[in-house]
Length: 286
Image 1: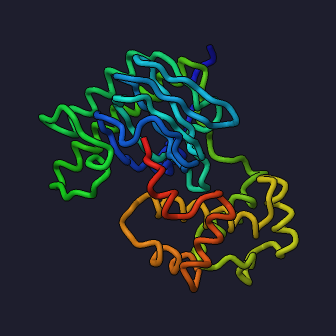
Image 2: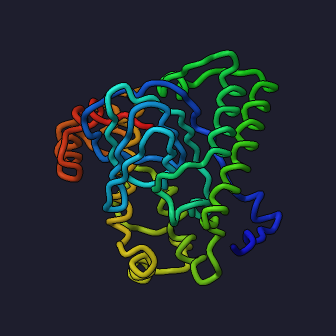
């Protein structure tokens, strides 16, 4: 197996990591397929029951004792009755938005060393607790600065084992784009920085490309134009905000640029096949 690619210090320091959760407990809904939901990269271990995942155009069975390593993308899941998981979610990406790991994921395997590291992570983050639900693990809580340092150090130690595990399976990290992609990355960064209620494919006056050339560049690298990119970005934001369950659908509609909640509902249904309220009820993340 080839050695891991070397990463310059300045490149590594530019990596952005966000630790989202570690939980160990029962899943929220069993016996039904979830809606198609956006998920961050992560790993979950099936401690009881079984899980089925639909992603990348295929269905994967994750039996008891196996882990599922997920890519940051859309997926559906189904849980058998009484399923219990040990799960970690995180985000890690370069400044241009490229995930650290992307290719070769969405698979089930036995990875005992990573499971031990995940159990240790759970013990360090949730001191003294034997079971923590997904909702409890994703609640925003205040900590002392020393506790936050312990929390981040625990995730960093786990992350080392994840990287080593993936390398052992032949999965290498994605390094930042080469120079040939940098202009496209600059364009993507600009589009991602725009307010979600602005969907017209316009560029700032000082941008080094015209609108037509920028649209062609995005088509070349992503297979979609700027208008479709912005629409997909708004849909991804809608999915995430609906699942967060912290604001009303009317408030979400307004922040995404819809003057009326009914227009938002019709738009969301057209893209996903279900209304926002049905999507919220039928989609629980792992």
